[in-house]
Image 1 (tube, one colour):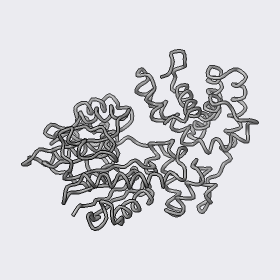
Image 2: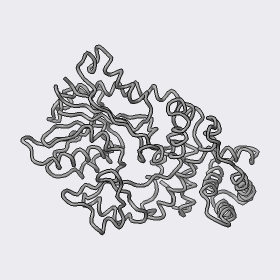
Image 3: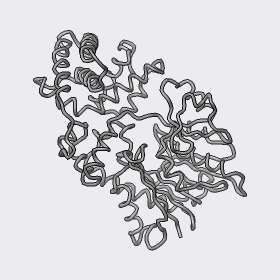
Image 4: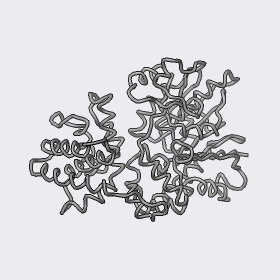
Length: 443
């Protein structure tokens, strides 16, 4: 947590959080959660905007800074320069650069030191001029130029050029550099948003999904508390839609945290009406910090759908673990939303591109295949299994499913499962986060 002696303006808070990120490489969302509860509403939103913007454009700003400083500045000073650099990139009309310089210098006097504030004055002025002189890469620019301008690692841009081509890669890079809108799923049974809600909810082309207009957080919180609304990206509809939960079914959400898809499936089961048997959702995930959030979200499941939480490792869990909770060992349907590279959600997870390494894709694919085989063992004969990720990389999607079906001695091989349908979303094409989902049926 931040201490009482530290400054608490949104700008200074963004610098303090960014300093911790530079020093310890903590996840940005974890850093935001460490803000005091008193930092809320507009102040929290401004802090997040500055922090995310500085991380999002870090590569482009750093490339110019290294020509302006003799040696690498300490993390606190570097954070000041990165936040100021983002404000320069963001723009703001006549006199904007001068205002950014002045504000950064004044902040540096408190957050750093007087000598460093003079250095900030000189560097940010030169940085402003350098950014003005920059030209966007030409249409067929190479990986290094694209990586520098759009602030992505060169190796990742090269990988995407090979997979998506020049036009697709550039569109993806442009997408990743834009702030993410907030989407929400309307869940009030039997009622559409009324005139009051539509004052702060903008309809989208995806059924029951709305964009939340800025500056309405109190109304959003009230709607969430009433179970009318759930903050959720439209990309989540792919996996839930393929699974097609029905009332009276038993469903296992095998990697459930933070629980958004569990709630969506429960809502779909409620919408399905009465059934002969009970509707059951079993949400499973590893013990840890994420379980608290999972419990909170599961408490929002609708009446009429039984929800159970199992803390355990899917890779090691057998029938005994489920029996200990008086739960079935096999299910009508299983959803495996597997851990992945997060390449489809970089608008929201702005630090992912700086944490990813080239060999991570193969490591993820091995883990995903193991989890898929473990999930398959929990599907009853004739049941459904949906494998999904928020990755746009074939190595984590089509290739994992193909290997699952190809392994002769695995639970998916030998004709025991068949691929019935798949759905994929590319952010720059579909207008929301990237995702992939594959519907498999046990014969």
